[in-house]
Image 1 (tube, each protein chain N blue to C red):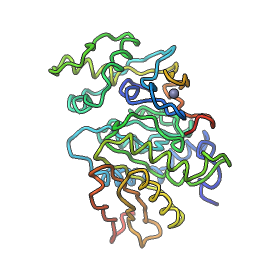
Image 2 (image 1 turned 90 degrees about the horizontal axis):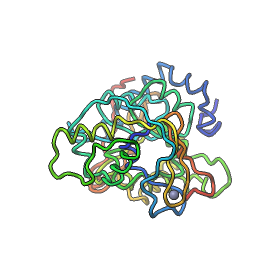
Image 3 (image 1 turned 30 degrees about the vertical axis):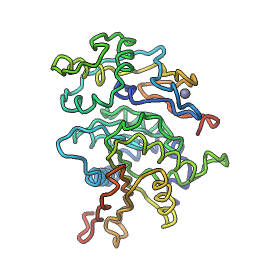
Image 4 (image 1 turned 180 degrees about the vertical axis):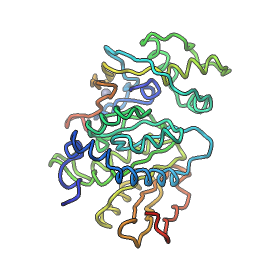
Length: 222
Length: 123
Ligand SMILES: [Zn+2]
């Protein structure tokens, strides 16, 4: 079966049934949790300082629950109403928005201390219509530009995602750079077919002078 | 689940709407109060980011008059408690937020605001 993002736009793919199935799958829960903890690690927020985070493509709140547990305040956005319904049922603490990230954000400059995004970015690589504002580069540009402005200086945004090619990584990172971000891609367990995970680590401001973190290697955790 | 902390960060993002697009105006809203954990450090860290007048106006529109018109220079416990309540415990469940500039209506249903734009509104 082909990858979900190639079958239908996310708000259609994740209808009521698929949203519940996805959220209740313990394997999915475990992987999402692991990737959320890793994203938080890469976000490397100052310790013991409360933070306000943006969860991009928060879905049914699998990552949000972890943000709650870790004591972060957060706002989540997702384009799939069915996923947000499940998040409401699960009583996550964050405010939820029905939003298409490819249309950009309206958050005031410097609103967030950081952003995380788990398994979402690949959805932006697929055009839904022939309208110019729906081309992947246009949507990525709008997304990264408005995200950059919504983040504090310095801060970071960490995206775990599933690219299908190096060209896709190249397209995404070049547009993020044009939007003002520093940073790059971190690959965990690059030699493992199963455990390999790709994280785009973006830096705002003086955070950009920092080194891109190293990927994990050696003994696989999964 | 729109709280005033979120409302205070939110401007209109429709195409060409770049001035006078904040704060969004509440319309026909119903609210619910829900207790949240008090965290003084979080509130203090947030204070410099808040647009004070927008917050006070929004709170008063929702019937809460506990915040002073001017942001106080000295932050005491009573003030932080009130701020906590206004920012984090008042949830807008139904209604809408309307852009003061382009009049785009962001409907709020079941606590979730619909931020989707139609094709001609996308920048
Ligand atoms: Zn507007």
